[in-house]
Each structure stands twice: as C-alpha cells, then as structure tokens.
Amino acid sequence: MIRHIVNVNVQGATAEQYYDFMIMPDDRCYHEWWPDEHLQYHIMKHGNEKHLGDEVYYDEYLGQKCRLRFHAIVSEAIRPVRIVWQMKKAGVRLPAFLILELHDSQSGIQIMHELRLGYSGCGRLLDPLIELYFNKSFQAALEKHCKNEWPRLAKYLSEGMVKEENLE
Image (cartoon, rainbow, N blue to C red; front, side):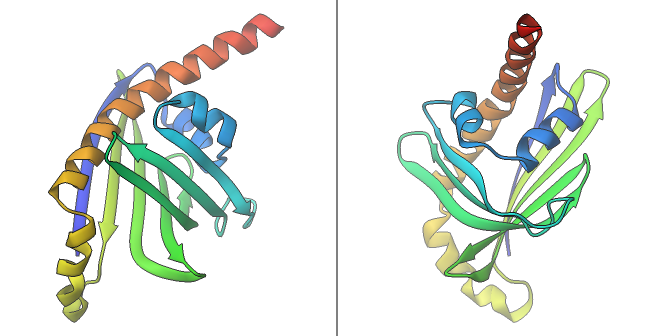
C-alpha cells in the first residue's frame, strides 16, 4: 500500500470551517479558492443527511504537469474532524482513498491530507503498477499543491466572510 501524507498547519481557520467547505462542494467556490489550479468539485449524487454516500466529482491541476481528477464516494464523515473519499471508476470502488483530518489548535488548524493507494496483503504486488502513475514527480507536485492550497482556503474563507458581512 502506498501512503502519501502531507501535514499542514494553517493560522486563522477552524476545523469546522474547512469541514463545511469540503463536505458540501460547489464548483464556483472551489474554482474561486484557487482559479489557476482548481477546476471542479461538486456532488453528483447525494447520500444521507451526514453526507455518507455522497458521490462527488473532483478535478484539479497540481502545478503545470500533473492533473488529479476522479469520481469518489464519501465513505466516512466525522464532523468536523475527518472525511474519507473512496475513488471510483465505472461505478467500481477502487483501492484509492483521499483522507482529510482536521484538528483545531491554538493558532488555527492542523491538517493531515493523505492519499492512500493500493492493497494490503498479497495485493501489494500491484503497487509497482500504481507507482508508475503516482511517481516521485506526482508526489512532489501533490505535496507542493497541498502546502499552498490549505493556507489559501483560510484566506478565501475569511474574505468570503467579509463579503457576507458587507451585504448585511
């Protein structure tokens, strides 16, 4: 099994804010968050009231050379600390998970962004095939992207709150 983890600390945000934004995706807001890299992120089919079973589509660039797009289903949603999306292809769940853990700290939020790919046990024999796609270059692009995007979200959310306050 391949595990790629990026930890980021962000000031001026809360786990609740990030959870709400990520569990209720909207293409317009997602694109405004980072126009150069974020393309689409929206719910295609709703699950239950806690968003378990929501089917989403996700599409973004990771720098200029890599692109990450997939269909996924929310397989775990623990408000406001954890969301797990399991990727799908042609309606079949893949051994590929995007895991987001959010924890409030004194200065803001601690984020753990994990991409988990492949099988455990004897299925690990297929990991070298996965590594052809998820190579060192892709991993570096994902790490750089994560370290830039999460602080950008705090800024986007704070600017959005200011805009909302000005409307009242």
